[in-house]
Image (tube, rainbow, N blue to C red):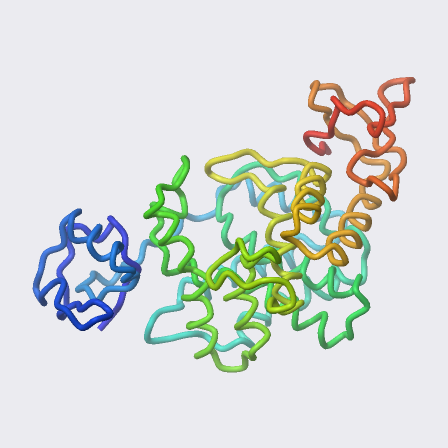
Amino acid sequence: MPEITTSYSLIGKTLEHDVFNEHGLLLLSKGTVLTRNDISLLISHKIYMVPVLVSPDFPFSSPEPSHSVISQIEDLLKSRGAAEKYLTALEQTKELFGKVTEVYIPPLRQFTHAFFPLLDQVIKETGLFTPLYLIEGSDNYTYRHSINVGILSALIAKLLNRTTEEVILLGQAGLLHDVGKMFIPQEILMKPGRLTDDEFEIMKQHTILGAQILSRMEGTNEVIIQCALLHHERRDGSGYPQGRKGLDIPIESQIVGVADVFDAICSDRVYKSRNSPFEAAKVLWTLTCDGLLNPEIVNRFINYIATLYVGSNALLNTGEEVEVILIHMDEPMRPLVRRGDEYLDLRKHRSLSIEKMIG
């Protein structure tokens, strides 16, 4: 019997068997046609998966990526010889994620078959991935985000002098960190506005669902499972789903968590436009200073990222175009830039910031 994530998209669906609370009390009987009040009742009792009769096309299928995003990937990565590898990985990732059900989970080797050639090239060629943050549009964000987080997680592992095997493992973990979102309703994933408290409780379940899926995946291991479960944990205990603190969060999960935050900030999503990698670095730095993220990971990562954009063009928050000239290691998110014939040290001009990178 299929169990579907509890959400208001299940209104009108029929329960396949009785649902009980944690104390064994009957909440809803088999055959109940779910109403809005029924869904609210289930959520209030922290029942996030329910057995319902569903049509073969449920959960929702995701839209095909638009020509706009595909053409941008081709244009931005073609000169670097990576466009075909990225698009092949994107197509296969989408296809395999779509096959994940309660009954069937593709083995790990199928997910990594098309991803590894891309990962290998990115690891060897510094800055190969930077054009990805020029892409406009949110089409197939979940799948692109999965690939990007896989790339970034592996890069961070390399920056931390991890072994080749660990770098590859972090790439796999990053690729699969959000697989649980395949069981989160599309109307929540694609909602253009702020999630309600109930919707956010459902969204948070993607970590638990992802770990459950990966624990049954052939070829996976504990690190990959933990990264799916714990990538939203924060060092001060404010994260989810377990509220872990400090050293109780595995370093691998912390790495994937940093990669996840960075890519989310730098990418267009249905409810917000992308920010520049320098803005993302600023957010990571703030979260680190507030005790949420690991300073060793964040410091190495943002210094590395910032140096990749020397010589690149960007837009300031004033709308003016500048060129990135020099990265200050003490404050990499506020570089020296050139505006026409004038040089501006953004450490001194605190009201100015890099809003967006441009091609």
